[in-house]
Length: 77
Image (cartoon, rainbow, N blue to C red):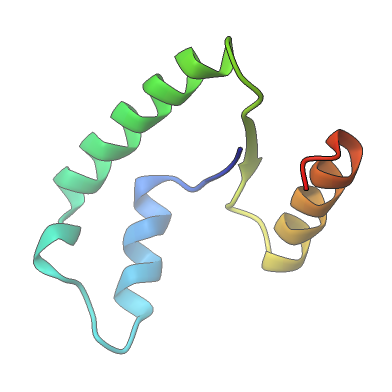
């Protein structure tokens, strides 16, 4: 599993750039709560399974290349 890790702050910025704007469920406090909950669960699960965290704060091309390299190196697909 590959997890693209993006901070709540940058998630909000990206959501605000969308044409449709923010939806009700996309409030800052909910995004922050969900982010830290998922991150904790995934870190715990990482001990038992192959989970790769990719820094999603970088440009799309760099994120894509890192994911592609992890898939190729681990023969995930």
